[in-house]
Length: 199
Image (cartoon, rainbow, N blue to C red):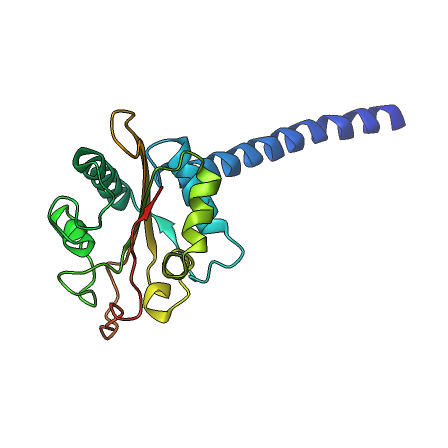
């Protein structure tokens, strides 16, 4: 009788273990897919993960935006084609670039300007490119949302593009935005000069 009870109890543990494994697999895949839409390759996805999981990230919510990721790729290719690192690549400011490519940027952003984009060129390493962004105070403020204006941004898109026939070879684009905020517009142009990082 005791032997049968133990045997029966042992059989009950098998489904529970399988259930836990299945649950863990689902959580792991969801975590992986979260960063997948934030980038076009492993490098950009790692950059997105660094930004979203940084211990000093102040945004209460930051999610991956497929649309911003697509626009980040467009911008990275524009930088490579123009062989320069400039926020006005493609003869558009970043705010205009987002709107022109179908991202319904909140009305709190000026039509022209840049309160959404960090770009860098010439650095191959993801870790070093991220460190370069953080070493630049304006970029750190944008990436980590260290200003009430940026803190309201809840969408993220990242691209990394490599083209060995261009001067910088390695191109990084990080885009932030929000489509649903009605906050009062704030002129942050004078406070934050987001100059491109070139190496």
